Length: 125
Image 1: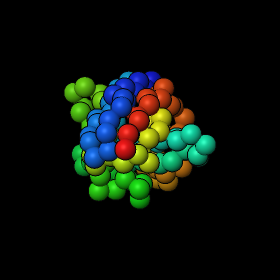
Image 2 (image 1 turned 180 degrees about the vertical axis):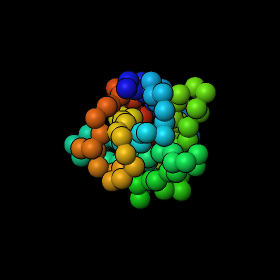
Image 3 (image 1 turned 135 degrees about the vertical axis):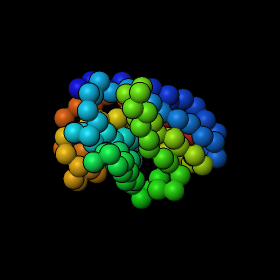
Image 4 (image 1 turned 90 degrees about the horizontal axis):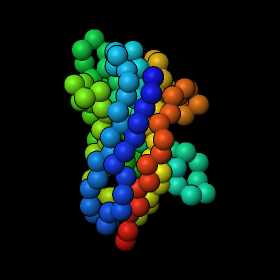
């Protein structure tokens, strides 16, 4: 599995941004694809996870982004998107997409064995 993240940039507070994670995954049903972020001087933080099971799709979010961010899959493009709305300066971080097999404990970064390169998001006040 290989992951390629993109879409970071500079945005004003209150604005929106969409990150993309292109994944070389043949069967998304066997994997969880998630986004994490790491701000300077802080630990890596779980942002959102996406997985599928029996033709149904599921998502989970970290408390700090729930209601503002949305994760989705474009199966035809093999791409997982993270739509970020109502951005705040505290959302400034390097965002990483990651994948693992299985669907449990998605917030634990130690369980992910494949990581894409980070993409920097800066939210100005």
